[in-house]
Length: 404
Image 1 (spheres, helix red, strand yellow):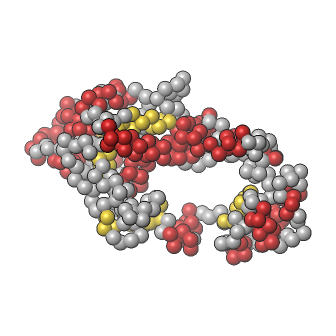
Image 2 (cartoon, helix red, strand yellow):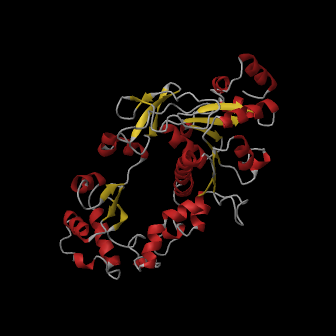
Image 3 (cartoon, one colour):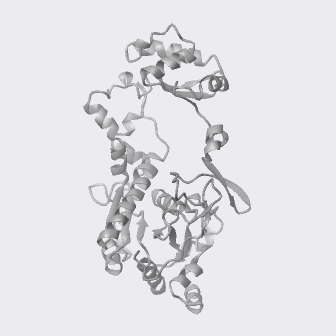
């Protein structure tokens, strides 16, 4: 721990799904997150779910308007302090906060934190042990570092978007999860924990440059391996993963709903044909791409003969590699998801708000039950008091606009 001002432990809550009071496996870590959008807040949420004391630094100028906004789910379990970083008192407060922190999260364009006087070198001079986490789309360096972009652009540049296609069609736009949350937030969280572990040994922090293009490229390692070994065909009509085959695809049912099939391995394909009552189809043709159009038409016609519910009854839980395409509401009530507690209902402003449960699941030190998302400046007084400011000093800061 780095703390010249020791942080209090986060509020202890019940472990998700157990009812046991636990602080979470990351209890004792203090993370300072500079407010942003996308992967930065999600990284902070992951760490807060696991018990870290995540303090969100927001703009004092946003305080009044932000009170009208719904509580943001990615801010669950965090504390929020609203400061004017251009004021002397606000800057003093943030330096006190960073002196007490183990890590920092920021998701601005390269150079923004430096212009605020809060770049890695300046922070390291105040707190050499602090791990400095940065997440961007293009990375801190390179010709595109200063360019604007979004999830779809980062996934496209890595080549991964080209794999989300159907024969003769444009690539399908994925949800804004692959780049922002997968390639960005997950790799930032991983990098932070790696660097925090190293800081325990060496006593020195370091910069974590989490670029979404880096993370997405890393996630595509299996595809690159398959290409190198000749198992990934760039021609969609010959690639079993690109919706050309009869056994790895989304199919429409009689009711208008959809199901998914993923029976790649021969035993699973044989089981699929049996449950589809297509015993006349030769399983030895599974990987013959020349036969796929006719076989796929047969499978599609058979699936259109029954409703999604009927196919669920016939195939769910089998080795046919089957799952229905569910709406977000349906997903929350599906028996398997309900049994695992995949979603939780948090009381937020007088009503229940459904959110995904913390993940992953740890047997000995599970995640804590999240608190509702922090409102802008909700914990300003408490955090400033922890940093050693008196009630009079806090009142003076608020009167001058240095905090809210």
